[in-house]
Image (cartoon, rainbow, N blue to C red):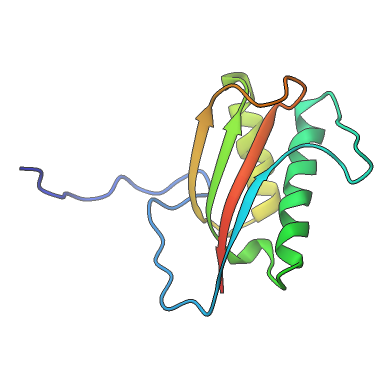
Length: 123
């Protein structure tokens, strides 16, 4: 039998868990990719990461939501080497907002894409 103990302290701009009490609505954001509205994909990680966050913010705005409404974010990185830069940019974008977070190192659908982010927002 497993007995729950104290949580490891939250850190790095995320929470271990986040309760949403009776949201009026929930929006699920499909995996956003580092492609601009004109179809361009930058070659460097920082530009791609900022483009993905812009795409997430744009998708949220179509539902009258903002990044502050995010409750869960899953980031898929193509290489472990991007984890520190990814964390820094996420914290830059989200500021003090700390949704539940998962980061997965995996292959990405298109080899040119260095990351993909999917999210859940509630308000």
